Length: 281
Image (cartoon, helix red, strand yellow):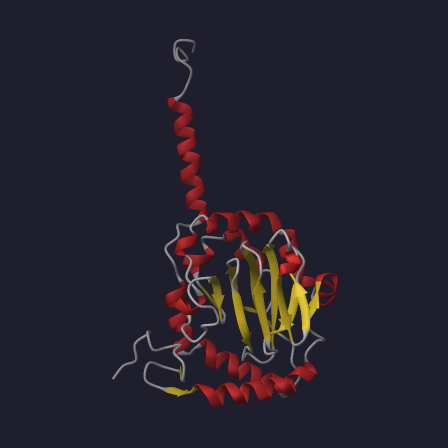
């Protein structure tokens, strides 16, 4: 009996293929134990602002493209209702009830979601200049929402937050990472290890948007054998294929929308030419 996509991502099982699955809990526990070992090899994290850029200077590619990314985001948010909640894309990750936490996935474990990257082409171009990126998404958190404390299971992965929209009182919208307290400021990056327990609270009525990028840390032998094997196992799993299919949404590509808008403006100009213009030619 084949396994439907609706099962992939459910609690209790991790689907390698349509028919083969492994128990979720022991796999997660093993991976978190490995993360405690790998942590000794990881850069000193978390880091914010200039410290983050000094440690990972390649991330300045996003600063260079900041205005273009903001323009992409503005277009994306004009289709806000089409953006899925995180648990609609991956049912296992129900950290916020309802649709208060929406995610727009551009890349998942090395697979580009082309329908989505076409919606924000300048953003994807900037991300593509950063080596080692395997996952990238816009994280859109509504006012008053709280993401419960949790640990990611991707040991040896570095998570980057690039803030794009923050509340007018940024200190009231914060993230706690392993006892370190941060709040976002537009354009000031935050880098951390997702396997450390973290939680988020937006105590304002305004939306917070960050661009999240996951990339692999350089690991020495033999740790890199484990991280490479895990990456390829997850990358080719039924889980990731299901997420890829669920994440793609039907928002028109931004460049097409701009061309259509330019055409309408040009047409309007032609239709509203001054009376007698033809006679004056």
